[in-house]
Amino acid sequence: MPAPANLNISNELSRNEYRLARIYIVAAAMTLIALGQLTAFRIVDMTECVPMPSFMWLVIAMVCKCLLIFMELFDKFPVNWTLGFVAVESMTLCVGSYYWPKMERFHTVIVVFIVIGTNFCLYLMGTFLPVFILPSYNFMLVLTIVFVIVYIFLIILLHSLSMRMIFVLAIEIWTILYLIPLMLYASTLIQQRRLVNMMSQEYMLSATIITTMFLYMLHVVTSIVLEGVKGTLS
Image (cartoon, rainbow, N blue to C red; front, top):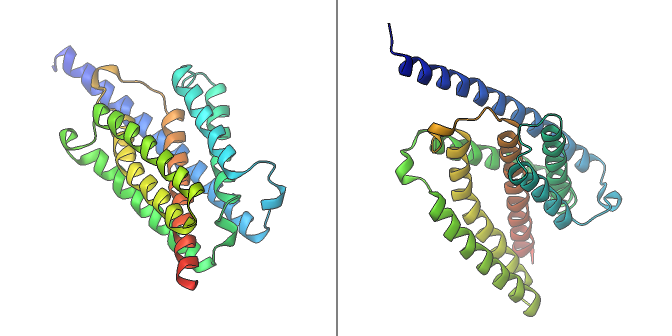
């Protein structure tokens, strides 16, 4: 008979596989709903009906995720589901009320497939690559501080100088460069590769993070493409 310790490890792994299945099912469902709503935004331009600018919807989504994490509401039903859906809906409105309705259909399809493919590759890398070559907590802490400082500096330059398109592109590209290691780091946490001794059955927070990061990358890439097309035409 296998030792009790081996049985405990096997049970933990089985529970984690069940948890991951729930995470990806919920994330896929929320992503499909969000893409359906974004399609509706393109059919009927509702930009004027949205009561707040795009940036405020991003802030609301961030607040919801912070409440889930820091108030430890991620496993308290129905609060976790409510905050998760509010975060996803806010990010959907963030995307839909900015450049999304202004893009050509061809560009929209390309952007969606690029973002889906990038997300898929990043989560695969975070799942299968050795942990020691993936971004660590300390690396992400330093990178986040550097990102915020450079981001604020670029915002100041954007509003101080006349070369708007260059600085908008610089901000969006800098954001993408930050998002890539952030998603790699997040995937290791979702897979619980760094928390073997602290396995949790939460799934709504992880699904919310996957969906909102997908939507935010969609938002950023949309901005890059549209600004690039504008620059080419001008």
